[in-house]
Length: 116
Image (cartoon, rainbow, N blue to C red; front, side, top):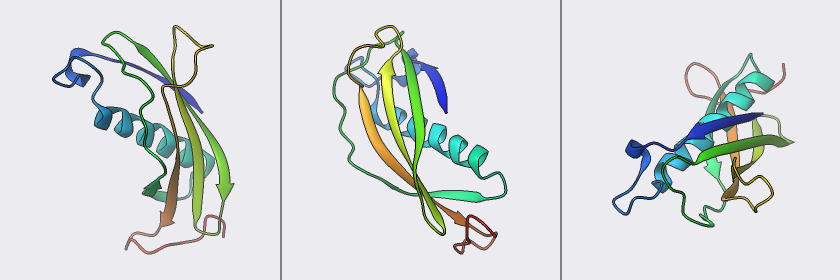
């Protein structure tokens, strides 16, 4: 799955760059959507995000390209590799990359299998 975000003034930290927490929220949301599309019968919660390392700063007006790809499937969990790029410079290295893992839960919050 692929999506885009525009970095707006309200997304910036006190130094005028993209706030890292905002990027993490966008990454989590994009991967959650990918998981929900791949497994429409499941309810997912985030259980982990691997290494968090911002490779360089991002300014207002940047269009971010967020790419999520399913990397592994377990019995109750699924993991996605995600990379974030500057849309205007697609050949440049990614701004951010990580792996996000979700677990499928029932209405009471207990783990449930991805597949019946």
